[in-house]
Image (spheres, rainbow, N blue to C red):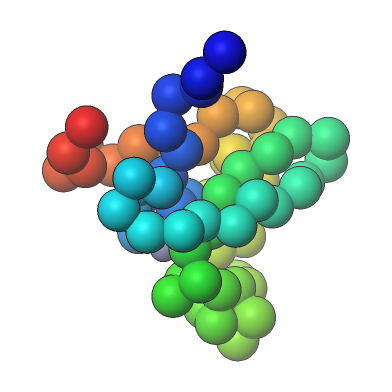
Amino acid sequence: MPTAPVACLNCGRSENDFPVLVLRLAGHETHICPQCLPALIHHPDRITEKLIEAGWNGTVPRPADHKA
Ligand SMILES: [Zn+2]
């Protein structure tokens, strides 16, 4: 059964447009694209809040400007 497309938690790019990597956090799954991975590596403080949100909610944040 296909699931709804996931999107990068940082930039909101959909897996339909670009590959996204699965991140595991506290038993939840979230996603990040390779272009945002360096931000996670070098500036984790900028993304931690989004990661925690994603982990706690168990959902990937969807920016308002993201085209479905
Ligand atoms: Zn991204």
